[in-house]
Length: 329
Image (cartoon, rainbow, N blue to C red; front, side, top):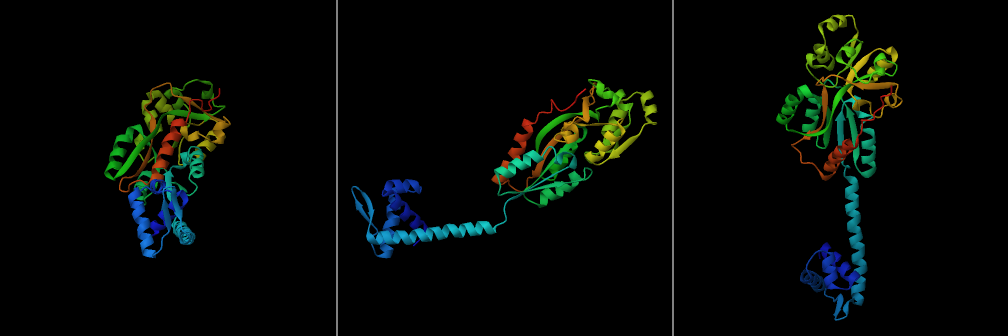
């Protein structure tokens, strides 16, 4: 006696038809008929009367159906117990602190509602080490993703290195750098900011990624400035920080500092939503832009739930509209 025979028995009892029962259990009618006949032969009793008007259980068939129903329910409970004992699916997402909260909170909250059985883990990495750290994690821990910003100037080299490390990348979002400042900053009254305007004020550098010293946003803007402005810059304050919190504190406390960053990092941040901090686009073509990539190891095939997670991130970023991001005059 096999458990599938009991499933067939119960379906035949429910439908009272060999053709309907066979269709519902996805086998042919002859196969179903053979399975029921084999069960009757094994038990030595007739379980069903086969009449032109339909199939009807015998008195012994009724008794066997009751016991078969209990056994099938026990089978279901066994699978449920085994499933409950298994660790739930776990998806890890790594990114830098500057975009982990405002950008990802809504996405992760909604995904958790849609997939309550999945454990989500958001891991923040210091921006200077995220590429090196995530490559090790991605190649050693299945179900791990990383959302990383890569600047235009280093994009080709970084992506080539990721490919050599068996890391798959999916482009998610691209945007240009703009100037962030306090709402009462003198430049906030302008529609656009020139490079010379930017360099005339104390500046902040938020290290988004590991990169050569000469490839920071500040140094690239500095190299675009005029000679006279470069000389004046020696008297200006330039501060490098590692967190968006420090950037905001400097902007709000001094009222004079500016920083060149993508707009996306301020999404969902209360200081930006209250418009205490605003942004202005550069009037010049600075060539400063950031590409956001979702990366994961190509050594592990993605599970269906992991594919859903990847697609959810792609879909979420397609809905982001920062055109009307707070920028009051």
